Image (cartoon, rainbow, N blue to C red; front, side, top):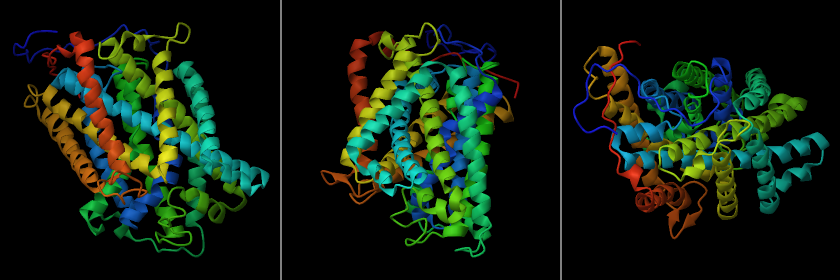
Amino acid sequence: MKDNAKPSRLSTSPVTETGKGLAAGQIGLFTAIVIGVSTIAPSYVVASTLGPTAEAVGTHLPAIFIIGFIPMFLVALGYRELNRAMPDNGTTFTWVWKAFGPRAGWMGGWGMLAANIIVLSNLAGVAVDFFYLFLAQATGQEQLADLASNPWINVATCLVFMLGATWISVRGLHAASLVQYLLVGFQVLVLLWFTIAALDKAAPAVQFSPEWFNPLGIDSFSAMAVGLSLSIFAFWGWDVCLSMNEETKNGERTSGLAAGFTAVIVLAVYLLTSVSATVFAGVGDSGLGLANPENIGNVFAALAGPVMGPAAILLSLATLASCAASLQSTMISPARSMLAMGHHGALPPVFTRIHPKFGTPAFATIVAAVVSTAFYAMMRFVSTNVLNDTILALGMMICFYYGITAFACVWFFRYTLLASARNFFIRAVAPLLGGLALVAVFLQTTVDSLDPEYGSGTHVAGLGLVFVVGVGILVLGAVFLAGARKRRAGFYESRPETRYIKQENS
């Protein structure tokens, strides 16, 4: 690491890190987009978040999805700039470390790992629910769907799903992409079928109104913060494309384009499905209403039959496929983040182990799977609505690590911000605004989640479970940081990066 002398503003050499042992050039743009969409898992997201979001913002579902997209898009611009300058699969960890130093880098990386591990557990849980629902529909034995409510059977089935996803992930991105083509294509086609069928019904529950796209119609900032947290979660996952930047053809250019295309495709899917579901079912708290407590955690389970008739089983299968695809592809990000953290010295060297045949971070992948399964098992026995609580806690993690990465972009490029109008808006204004918006949502959610009734109403020592999980994980990261500073002093004594890049190309 260089000293702290003022960096040259004329440097054009990218800051690169190589030698991690990953197999390079495995996938192209289309495959990266497919993996990005599969990680976000639109069918799973719609099934699990449309209800809670409707409960918070009513018919303004399209508005909240658009508003949630805006800070994510602004932050994505900062991600793209950092990815160009430092194409490293550690992403947030590496970039925040180079901008603010090793302690901030650790906390950013910890937040990203926590978010991925939480969502892996959530994905597995939804996959279990839809697996038994699919079996019940396929066999006509309705009692099979009730097996998902048995915590022991639920956790055991979750473990099976996690083992399968881990096995595919260890075999590499090429093997994973072959599975993703089928699963992603199938779920997108079924979602389009659902959308058309819902809009085609003769007696809509609610007449469509352009007012649904007006964010000013939302009652309060607290309601908007809940909706934004869920909406941000709905778009989360596009950055997996950047985690693969060392394994894609044309590196940072391909991964950056893939991230952008992924976000836009998913936004279109959310707008279509949210409008069609609202028109068909309304946002009431009874009957088929999206805010009905009996439907809120899984709107597709309630709407599939009335909307698609005998083909309802396809929607259950599509959501199961969505969870399975995302479960596998989501493992890409935490495994490669831990690989990068081990490579740079923030984690023990064992995390740098690469599978000799498949060229993948096998050890880190297995660790991510084990921790996710353990977290899910704990939450399944503690929470009365594990899926809703983990999604809300996950929103806090996403806001935290995306926000700190956005600020890292502004600070890392601070010597080049006035070099051009492009630099000023893309490297400063966009990520700064996106980061501030995410921090505002994080703080509001933190305050609201103190209420024992927040989320499922489960609480620990008078504090809401969402607060305990979200803030508790960040505190745990700080505790681990204190211990790691002694064991890996070489990394934690390093200084922020002192080379800054002036890129004239767009």
